[in-house]
Image (cartoon, rainbow, N blue to C red; front, side):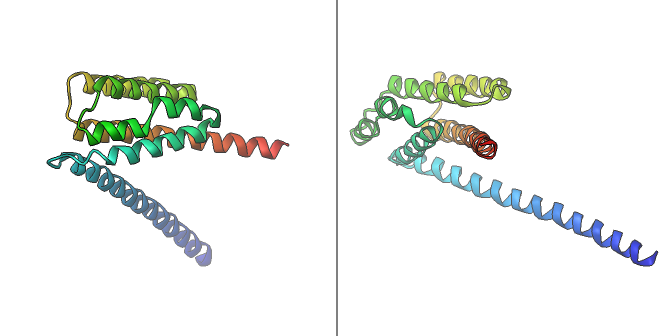
Length: 172
């Protein structure tokens, strides 16, 4: 009886430890993400702004979208033209209409690829993105907010795709 009591106490302590470790890892991950996005914000806040960081974000975004559907490569290259955007940045002639349409394009694919259960959450996020863009929020505020949401949503989509593929493979 004492051994069983001891075992149950050890088991409870182990579960508490496991819970605390999960919280710690989650906190570390959150802090790393916050630091990353704060760094992006700082780069965009410089005088002159380091808008080149947007190119890396767009490249990563395109790669993630292609991971969702490899058949959209030529369309992606047309709608998210990294060289064109690089030229706009280098010549300091950023076309807000192009950026706005590109953001709509990216959000459209997120809406298309995501599971329907996420529609309402994405609708709210999209509304906030468009509101921020339309009121003229500064790039150092807008782009971290936009791309952080994009990457979080695309990570969820890719996770769902991986699960679907795993199930599909196991059923074959």
